[in-house]
Image (cartoon, rainbow, N blue to C red; front, side, top):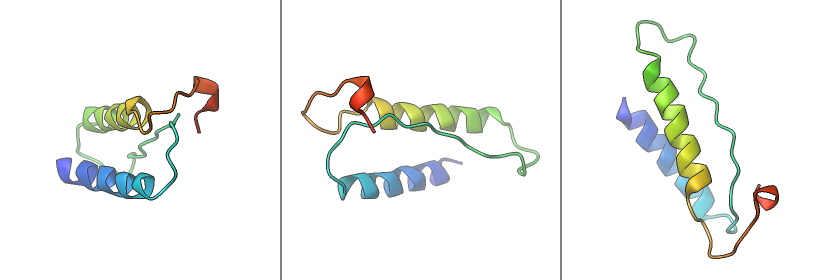
Length: 70
């Protein structure tokens, strides 16, 4: 279950690494209703972890207010 999360973070890192530096204010949504027989708490935790990683990481040394984030 950790492999998809690691893959997603690697892809996100690739796109962010190649983009100009900017602080982020992301909304994350994990869609999982078609997956049956799996503990849904895993997906809720994954959603929270991705949200915190993307929004709490300091991508640049510049200072931005919340309103200036993309």
